[in-house]
Length: 179
Image 1 (cartoon, rainbow, N blue to C red):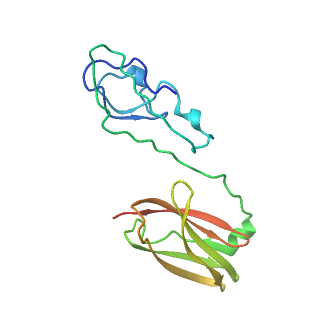
Image 2: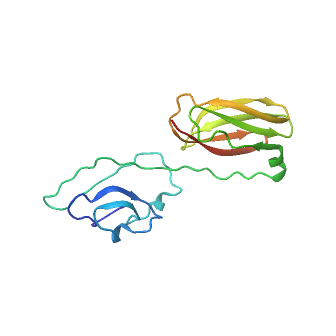
Image 3: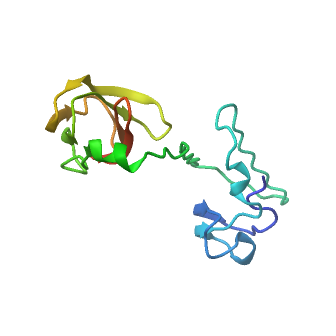
């Protein structure tokens, strides 16, 4: 897709520029220097439901004569989400996952959950790409309230997800690691 075609000018045109389909101002209606969020010429939503695997290429063209510039930095934020999991109300009453605490946290947090009956419980940690990074627990628990302390180990600061899973129940919540 083309993010911006023919909207430049002279000088430092793109400083802290963010292309966002939900931005209030289209890049075509902005003026240099383009600082802040702008709607791109073509929608980024084109990539919704597309695979994020493979090669991604950023191409920059400057068609002005005697003009030069430098790309100092750029990034591409990809967000992954899975299909929702629907669970009957009966199953929801058997397991209750609480928000971890503290949250946000630096090195250690506590996961708390309640079981109406004994069950094998697995709690796993995932990154933003959906990759499983750690298993907090995977064992049989009796009915009642339970708490498990967990240390981040070498995980970098950022947003992560934790998932509780039994034979009949799955729930996911997010948490934030700060350093």
